[in-house]
Every structure is written in structure tokens, then in C-alpha cells.
Length: 469
Picture 1: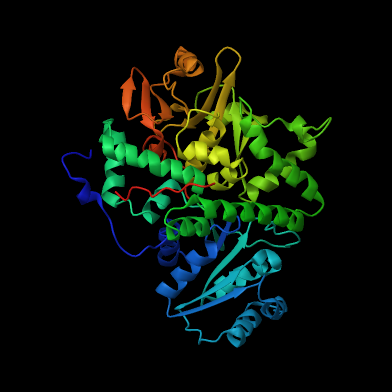
Picture 2: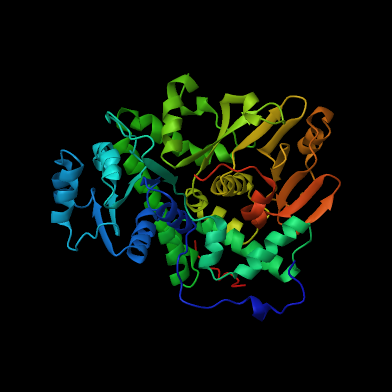
């Protein structure tokens, strides 16, 4: 709990650094693995910057080549016939000596020449240097690769900055974040002034999102959300361009799905209606295109289940799902400016349920949590269901409006005796409280919901100055 302290004790000052959680995973790889590392994720999420900083800080020698920007180097490396030839060519390209046992070689944008992946096994067995390969999943499908080196490559999927990373960037102290987590665990309300400040920060995050360049600009501009929107629109256009470039013959279908994401999230159920893609459209025709967007790190798919008991995947319906966007800020930029303004100002209208669901889905993915939504005729629809730490199911409802305690479907689900659900979570603007089996949780606490969940093994003319707690 956070009690009996003045706000001055929560103030944090210093030089801004966009601290990323992936750094800890990179260090763990360096200290515990003898494999090559493959880092994938959508464009502009900070992969290259994180790897570059890690390499320069932790190795005596560091060499980086970008196969998209350096076509000469690409041609040189593409001609490598084996691992020794590849190393020799890197040595000729590098402007620093390669120190055996203490050099990181970083090959970026490998989707431009994915055949380099076939050399990973031999490079690892050679053992003289460490290797990180990275590429945007927009197009990183490794087509035409004859042999992917299973067992020789560790894989990390990066995502946009989550809300906790956004808080770090905005100087919210570790003490405050730890205190918020303890409030959730102990089921105590957060002190009111901290609660209100965190709600404002969370609303700013919904609009700003987690693309590092956007977050950096947001802070550098004095917390103006005008320029961030311009950057987000540029990123959306770049994603559309990349779909055209990398999705090949499927580009029209993939782009049609991408264009429909904000439209479908405006609907009451937020489910993706495949027939919206055209007359007579069927999932069978578009299934590969949905998967392309998800594998590209652009879309987040949440399938339907018809039973709320573990394992949830047992009753998963592949034909019914919600499709969210991987970055809440980019999604917000695809709506009229009035929508972003309504989020920022915490207005009652318009209906912001889709945006709020989207940010929760993004946070659950960042936590490494598999999520579904529940729907059954006799119960209705519940926004999310996840596996709890004790094998039970945790239903989650997201409330963007004022009627926080109106959740008929959730109540009906909780009353199904055969499911034996001990507790449900309602995420809203309200402070933490509990009524019966329902725990009402401030929506900004989504970043620490992993306390209750089973996780995968990781893998507009307005401005707002966030509260630096």
C-alpha cells in the first residue's frame, strides 16, 4: 500500500531514457545461452535501438549491418558460402576489430535476405562471436529457407512499449508502481491522489501509445499530443506500404483486414465480422491473411471460447474472434481527432469501449498472457477470460463508461456452478474495491494483472503533462 507519504517522496527526476523490458531478456540471453538470437516484431517498436544499446554496453566490440539500408553490405554478405566466409566478409566490412569471445554481430532487417538464417547453425557452432538477427515481422516469413536452424536460435518477439514502460519514460517512480502492485495483491485501494494521477497517465497512454519515437516526441514536446498524432498517422501509412511490399499476392486481402480493424471495434460486440470484407467473404478465403497480420505483430487476435473452464483452448472457436491493433496510439490515430480528445478529457461520449478493450488486450499480450473472450447463448458475452494461477478461469470485463457495476453477462457467468469461478475482475476508472466475487480494479492496474494469471514463458489541439509520481 502507499500510505502516509508526501507526494514529494514519489517525485523522480533525471535524464530521460526509454527503458525497455527487453534489455533484461537480452542480458539473460548473453549470460545463459550459447545460441544465436532472433528478435522479431513490427516496425518502429525499438528493436534496433534496444539491441544496439545492449551491444555497445555489454561487448568489447560491436558490429551492425542493416540489410535494408546498406545494399552494398547486403550484396557482400549475401554472397557468403558458409560460416567462415560470412565471418571473413563481416571482418572486411567492419570498421572495428572483431574480438573473439567478446563481439556482438547484429544483422538487422533480415527479411531483406532471409537465407542468412540458414547460416545460424554453423555460426553458433563456430563459437567465436555472438549473433543477433532482427527483422520486422512485416515480411519476415522466411520463405524459401531450406533449413531453419531449430535448436540453435533463441527467439524474442518485441512489442510496443507497454503501460509500465510508458510510466518509466514519464518519470513515475518504481516505488509508486510497486505500491500499486501491492495494493492489487492485498486488495486495498490506492491513495486517491495517486489513483487520479495514474488514470490521467493511462488516458494519455491510450492516445499516445507505445511506439518509442512517438513516446519520445510526446515527452520532448512538453507532453503535446498534437505532434504525436501526426507521427502515428505516418506510421499507419508506413504499415500500409509495408503490407503492399511484403504480403505479395495477399496484399489486397491483408490491407482490407487492416483497414477494417477500427471499424469492427466500433461495433457493439467488437467481434470481427468477416463478411465486412466483401460480398460472400468467408474465413477460409482470408484465414492466411489474418494470420499474416498477427504474425507481423500488427494485429492481436482474441478467439472465442464457449466454456469458462481450464483449459480454455479446449472450446476455442477458430471462426469467431476479435482483432485488435498492436498499438493503442496507432489505433486512436485512425479515429477522428474528437475520439482521442474524448479519451484524454475522460468524456462520457462517444462510446470508447473498443479503444479501452484494445489497450487491455495489448497489456495482456505484453504480460505474456493468453486471452480469449467468452460467449454462450444462455450467458452472453464477457470481454476476456484468462487462465488463473491455480488452474481456474479469471473473467475480465472492461468498462469505459460510468456504469461500472452493470455487468449482467459477467454475473450470469459467475453463477454457473459447474465453472466454479472464484473471482472476476472489472477494469474501470474506479478505485479498487470488492463486492462478493467481483474485484473492481483501476484500469491502469492491467500492467500488474500477471499476479493472478498463468503466463507464457517469454517469449488534436490539446496537450497533457503526466503526473511524475
